[in-house]
Image (cartoon, rainbow, N blue to C red):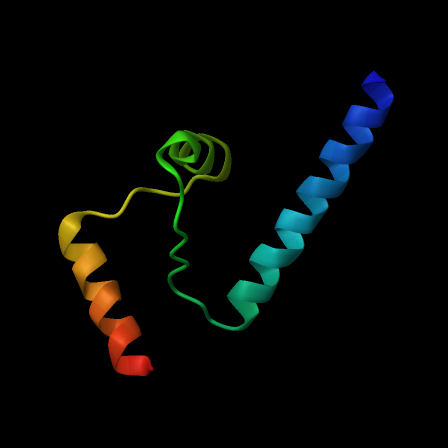
Length: 68
């Protein structure tokens, strides 16, 4: 079972590296993801995301409205 979990973690790490590389090649500067309060810690601690400040949230909200 331990070997299986390590294999899954390895595939997941490869997937995340590929996604990060793709976003970088597309010159994505910001990736804003909605998250349930229970999941915020996972995004911050495991994936090095940071929580938006209120001013940042308003900025991205207005950008989204303007782009539609």
